[in-house]
Amino acid sequence: MVHVLEVCSAAAHCASATPLLVIAAGAVLLSLALLCYILFPPKRHVYVLDFAVHKPHSSWRFPRSRIGELCRGKFSEADVAFQERMAYRTGLSDDTAVCPAIQSGDESNCTMEAARFEFGATCITTVTELFAKTGVKPHQVNFVITNSSLFNPTPSLSAMIMNHFKMSGRTINYSLGGMGCSAGVIALDLARELLGQHPNSVALVVSHENITNNYYSGSDKSMLIPNVLFRCNGSAVLLTNRRCDVPRAKYTISHIVRTNLAADDTAYNCVMQTEDAERKVGVRLNKDLIQVGARALRENMTALGPKVLPYSEQAKFAANLVLRKAAKLQPALAARLPAAWLQPYTPDFRKAFEHYCIHTGGRGIIDGLEKEMQLSRQQVEASRASLYRFGNTSSTSVWYELAFIESQRGLAAGERVWQLAFGSGFKFNSSVLVARRRIRDASHAAWDGFDGEVMWRELDELEASAAAARAAKAAAAAAAAAAGGDKAACS
Image 1 (cartoon, rainbow, N blue to C red):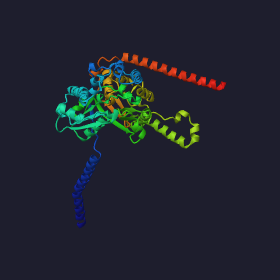
Image 2 (image 1 turned 45 degrees about the vertical axis):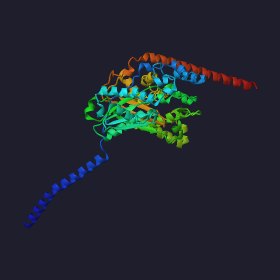
Image 3 (image 1 turned 60 degrees about the vertical axis):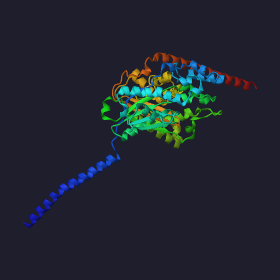
């Protein structure tokens, strides 16, 4: 009997202890879950609600023939001829825009006031258009981010926007300066990081490069090229993480990958704002630019690839890398392998993206990326059209190109857009946007009346002329070499 009572007592004790154990275990699990949430918070998606790009006023139109008129009397005839040649070789049309201060031909008109006027005319108007398109009110904006490499007044450009639209005193503003043609993606990345930490928020990103206070009047050819290429511009993008905006948002920001070669002296110096021998300020582009850009592209693609490429392409890339390293260590192995196997494998990014927005750095840059990535004529059309219609619009170019795709071609839900931006530093930055819904015939006034057939006809004629010039140069070099050989044989 005593034994039975002891057993019953033990059972009762265990029964009473069981709920305590369950509660303790639950508390431990809950604590672990909370710790994991704090250490590894869930990714908060950031969306592109909408965007707008500036359409220049017709009075700002700057046909290529005007370059000679503007330069003659201020530059040597050789420098005038150089700029005229460049204007017709770089893939620009006669419809690009230059601000009134520069078109006046009087350097004294390129004042701080004129530069502020250019920013207001290109960017304030674009932000106004964007607010009207989205219905977002200025007081609802939590963050304002501007980027402009070479025009950074006080008060800042972001403060200028806040003042114009009388935004809330709680709005936080940032102005990025000196970060080159890839700064638009950098500003986008900053906005994404801010929204990742602040729920239920809206960020406005305004990108711009100012022409008024950056016209070069010297005689250094490496500093004259920006005069020919850069044109007036402005873009505005609204980003959000508010739940109420998700159904109407256009894109999800999927990835942003940034590559920076600033630690390398050659890369750091290849695009530099400086003075020439006559102490005139301009932006110098040196001979290393193409080589540095190619290296930055490779590094950026290597970092981006695992995030976007299908496993089949990743496997090919990895196998090629291992094989090349093995061949380098074992020369005998390298001798037995086909030469093609030892060439670096460029992954097929066409399997990762449907649309491409390549920075409009120039016709040669677009040609090089088209060849490197084996892109089709249609896949680089947005970039060529943006360069042709608007010139080099610096950090805004990737948005002019996306506006072209939306208004001229359209996107299906789920299609992926690769924005490739690169510039001084040297930096190469990629952003990947995924369309959340079908986008067809989007309204972008900047592209109204654009005639793609006329553009391609002009560009094909330009390429034919360039090919003929290259052939003539090669023939002349061959003839000179043959003449030299004959002379050596006779002697």
